[in-house]
Length: 632
Ligand code: ADP
Ligand code: MG
Image (cartoon, rainbow, N blue to C red; front, side, top):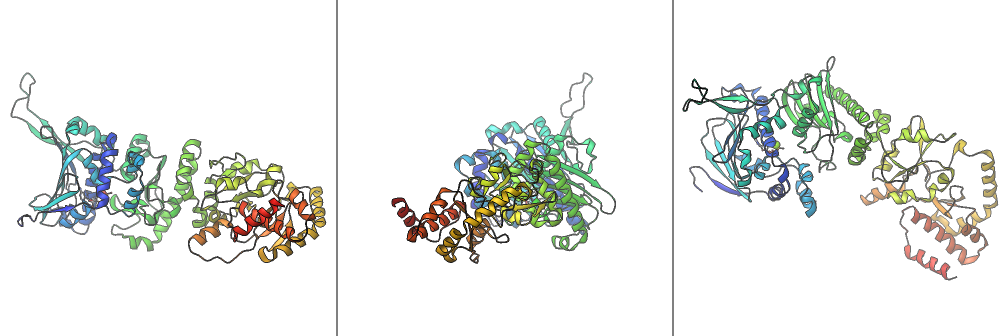
């Protein structure tokens, strides 16, 4: 370490080492993205300087023409990306280019299996950023100086676990990144290649990206005169903010490329919605639905929200106030004239205009999804990826409940398939004559839902039931009381009322059976004591001897188990035991006396609880009773 340059060598944070390793091995076929990432960082740096200079013009240091420059040297095998943006201080260099700030990173990396590590798309979820330079370079040198400060810094590393920082003199503010290309990546030190990559990835960013153009004077025969070369800088990208251009002029490819820039994603978005609003509110929004989930979708502090601009000046990434939590998968840009340039996250929380824009963007996003739903295959991809996030909607956003309900997809007994691809509208269309309600069941797994005894009568009568088994489903249904004017009813709760689907004759017959079993019901209740709230005869069942039912307003079994797992003590709830009067076991029960009666009654109750996915208080007692009966 020489004190003059204050040089020191530091180790990368463990996560960085892991990321570097994964990236170099898995992104091999996507190597060119390094340029997009470096330009994107340069553009961010220019945005940040412009924002900081609003208060302090001097930060431009007399050079307010923000730009990115790309140069190469084929002989030396280098590519240089330079910006005159905000630059970095020494401390910033050490923390920005030595660690990964995003929380949850370590966990995500740890979770990846060997196979997954080779999957470029998984790494892509992550936003590879600056470190992607090491896919093509075996050494990177960064020279930077923070605008307004006198101290320049050089950072260099071979991407192998450590990096070195030193103080340097640097005239220009901003950052210069020199990639020393690997032997097999020299192809990138090429004018044509670089130009086409800039156009492919960075056309839409507002900062001009320039490349040197060498021109020579010509002699009479048109040959270049040696020694007469002059270099001019040529802007190679379009250099207007994509969202500020009229819709009709923007191609799908441009929208897609811009998405990749905003979302740091490799793959194309499923759809987008670009809107310019003038009037009381003035804003332009460009919202995208990604094709896949980021790794931190379910992390409490995962990155979400839109990129916020005010009058084209970049203000912040991940402005989360403009979309509700249940739409946190939406990516995009919001540019508005309604906020002031010095708006902060704190101020956003108080500004009533933010609420108005939020409600407008929410509506846009929901409309965009509705449109996407017309394309069944694309919507299915969306649903499989983000469906369980959207299911948080009805609880969070009461006003848009009906709209969100229309976007939900379910498994149902109509297909008996685990694929959630049926809408409530599909269900309503298939409703039977006289059917007034939408029926559903919630269980812990798809199979448990599909084979629940509660469905027997519905299957017999051909009435469709929604099969729910996601963790959020009971929560969802407790906030979704009706759709299209039809009540949503849990078939495992309360009285079974099939309304007009049953005729008078059936009802009469049921009442008569109930009467004839009054004595049996009384005996079973006595045998089970306070283990059950009530015993009844039911006509829900065709194949099973018994089932347990919860009172109508009681929290369901699924939610109880989730709450209990979260350490929340739950008051005990006693189920109602319902017996199938035409089942052979129930008929047998009627003829049994004494201890055997008690055993059989308990076994019926325990079996009904098991069929519901519940846990027995005393499983050993159940086994003992069952064995006694088997041996009798
Ligand atoms: P991200 O851009 O998603 O934050 P990166 O890995 O691309 O992640 O960059 C890490 C950080 O390094 C950036 O957030 C920024 O603070 C800093 N940085 C990278 N490149 C530049 C640059 N050209 N100018 C200023 N800061 C930069
Ligand atoms: Mg970046």
